[in-house]
Image (cartoon, rainbow over all chains, first blue to last red; front, side, top):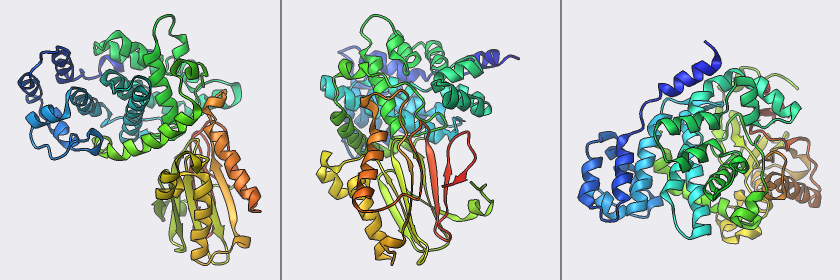
Length: 281
Length: 170
């Protein structure tokens, strides 16, 4: 079987995205939602319930001593419940993953790092956290879960293109394997019926400049968060920092270099506060 | 360049995380730091007393957050490097005998000024060493790859590993 067919088949065979997360997001999207409604969805998913209780006491969410699902939904608040549920649901896909010289735990650490960084950027730009952006951060590299084994097999070929022929890692993936991890990720997101914005953000997270017209700020924020985590080696793998730096991001997001360095310090603190999230995988 | 022997793999490893440093005079120890992206790993070693240390710093200049620098000096080049040397002196090392090797400071491709943390880290490190008359004995900086660095306290050997390459001595 050709490599491309193998990749496409692996995407098709990905387990479904936990419906609990989608259902909670839908219910909470209605301003009149009740706590009971949310609890009633979550409680039938034992794995998400257990994870939620485990991580909602983390310092990152700023609340302590939560013992029941009901209390979690009450005290965490809407944005935090959504973020905690996405963490619980998405983490399961990383458990058996490996690739890019990393195990699932390191790939997951990178996903959480990028998700946390998107919130720091979002707070700087719009003054608030954003659970959709957080989800995009968690999922941006989901394609690596499928593409990992193919990249591991061709690593020397890929690095040869990067080191000696001026390729970015993602373009080298395309050349050697026939597909890159962002495309694979976009296809997974489509299969999981994620909104267009999240799907496009995953597909273009290394090249938001190629997205075309429209408000692409969302994708640029994930792009910047990813670049920061790559520079800091957070879940840093075989692809390293071999991606294009796009200076448009400065004007688009209006974040100065000094702010960026301060944000990195903030990220390290958030990573420490969110260690329960990172420890899920 | 020399290949890594299997004995290197079986020794006890002490991991140095981001913004951290450790020193040792125990010849069974191997100090290791993983995933150096734009961050820089500084390995120092005094072969006479067999004392060595490894620092993994993150940013060039502590002026950006002096409170953080007090809490965690190893986060920045200008506070971490002096602390690394001083901690080794505490175990009997002497500056004039110190062998210094550095790795990391990688950058995003086609670097704009914006993503220059790797270069800024390299420049900050050179400035500090130059001011203090410290020579760098081995170096692998720049490029766009993550690196792992190991310092063997028994021999002072510093081994460098980058993806798609054999491990080699620095």
